[in-house]
Length: 307
Image 1 (cartoon, one colour):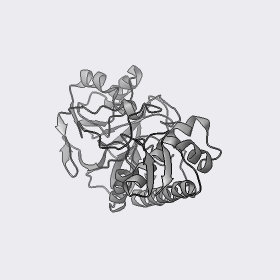
Image 2 (tube, helix red, strand yellow):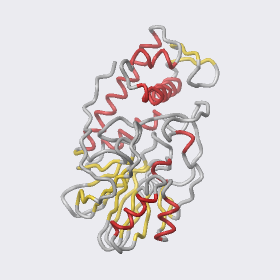
Image 3 (cartoon, one colour):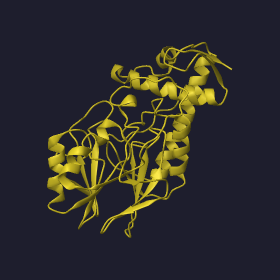
Image 4 (cartoon, helix red, strand yellow):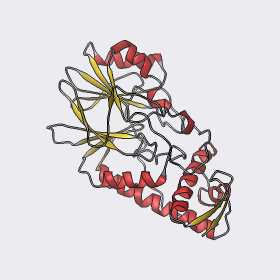
């Protein structure tokens, strides 16, 4: 079994109250707590004279009003999207109507998963906008800038194919990364097929390990330091989990439910569906590497065997 990670679950915030967490960076937390969103979705405002918003959050009129209030009359010129799960983008139309800002994100994508389509838990999976057409389409390494702010897009697929992290270009001592839902301090990210792909997720962790960011402000939960070290710890955890799942199959487990019951003992029942999705993502990655055989299309009910 994979060793437990040391999670950071403390977070200083009040709903609707902007909190400056770094020079030129303000955080607002949407009031949509859940087992999948922790305290709620983080929205960030960056800049001083003109602003960009990173992730407008869920459909919540009060949260939209809080964003506009925090702007304090300064123009919001851009809305940056880390990924299109509903808890991050359902508030986009209202904020666009109030600001006329340009949108920037990865945009439309097609699925490449070998996993059968599904309905996902907690706003995941089928609740992803695969056809989004942002005003500014961003690919890995491309920049977007306003009057007194600039970020570089870092493509980090795995949680979703369209997932972007944003690196703030700053002259300060901190090198700030907004990793969205790819790496958070309060828990591991949900990697739920067919939108989530474990192989992509692990590669993206390796990409973040190679960076020199000093602090990260994620999509849920509080900030954390040394993002590269955190990404490495999560990569080791995922590799150990992968090995545990394969050992479970070699030991006779023949389906997802049996694997979850064996390696997620004592898990909060509300999180069992997410654990099943994570196992499914690992199984797809193992199938791609010819480590297991699968009877029929890969799904939560597939019959499994070691290759």
